[in-house]
Amino acid sequence: MEIYEYNEVMRENGELKSKVEQLYQKCNYQRTVFRELQRIINELIVTKPYKKIKHIGLSPHRCKTYKKDYRINREKVFQEWWKKENQRRQGLNMGVGLLEGILNPDMGHERVILPISQRDASVAATVVQWFGTSCGQGFLHEVKQAFDESQEELDMKMKAEREAKIKKRELE
Image (cartoon, rainbow, N blue to C red; front, side, top):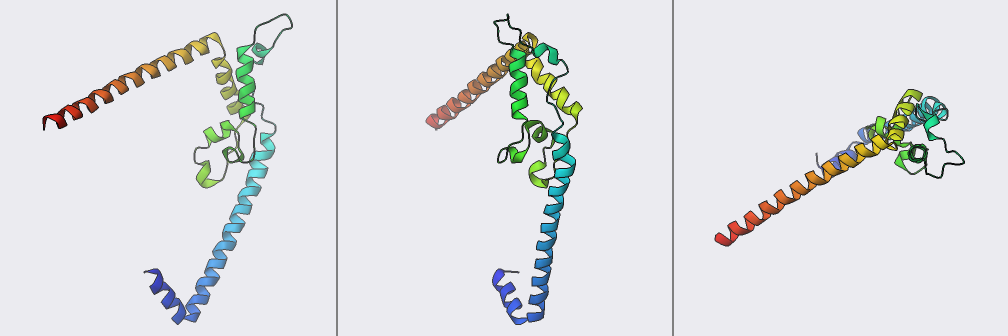
């Protein structure tokens, strides 16, 4: 039904119009109630327990800095950045921390945030802390190198295809 047909039917049938308006108001009320319930659920199930979650790895002793050690502890830097990224901030990532966003991929559609456990936070923090170790840095270096090589191969392939298309046009 086109909009002009809908408007005409509504003008002609006052009873139908009032029923549609009542239904519309009822739906709006139900949406409002549903949103309020979501907010309350998020507050009770997610927000309050989240304040107790510590984004610290399973080996926090490795992140200590000693007075006579003049080197920067890379693991500590990774750990501190991970903690910072998991702080909830209004207007950023829909108000959730990074780990919550990762573990709730459909969060944008549902607006219901599933709570994360301390175990989730500790395991993720341990992996991030590991990236600060020599082994973790080697892993990141190798991954970046493999990515760069793959990108270079793809670029060369795309360039060859473009050149082949240009030559084909010139021959025609």
